Image (cartoon, rainbow, N blue to C red; front, side, top):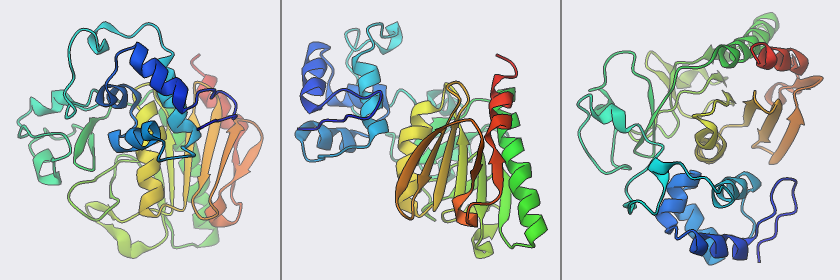
Length: 283
């Protein structure tokens, strides 16, 4: 039996199976609505995964306990095919991208998109990218300046960059992500086109359209690809999530006080109070 006692997560496997049956969701539909990969969800439902990640369970719980499903996502209105992914940028296909099953797209397919159209490709699946809000961009820029000037002062070789820059995590033609900020200390990974391989550090600032992708899909990809440290800043909830992929360890902190970057031995100290101020500036 899966039992998660962490704050905010109260469901176990039996609860998921019961609510899934009550709402008449197929596994594919629940995967689409929650953003949890179908393979991961299947292992949880079968009991194969004994201790799923808290954020994974929270995403499933959010869907199953949400009574008001938007009409266009209502599973009672139509049957979803397993190949359909509701988060994906179907609109991008209108620009001439060849019509394929999600999961089969490659980087060459994205060349049909108009210049300036930003999408991410993760394991052959296309994801649209909305324009960032001003608080989102201000938070990313503040982090960039803190880290950039720290590296400059220390005379380090690490490269610090803001979006939009393509990062080819797996060094193949099926994945290209655009983190809000990244640090690469192995300059052999850098090229004109972007980064070939996993950065040492990645920051993502959540927006309403990217929550599930950044907290679930990207987290798994970053951890599996060899990213050493991954920060997620949640401006709405004024929280910071830190994944230390070396120990491994996860911290969930309020945007308050100061926090050091692990890959630099706890330096520089990032002013979380300032990031909170930026998050609240236009509330």
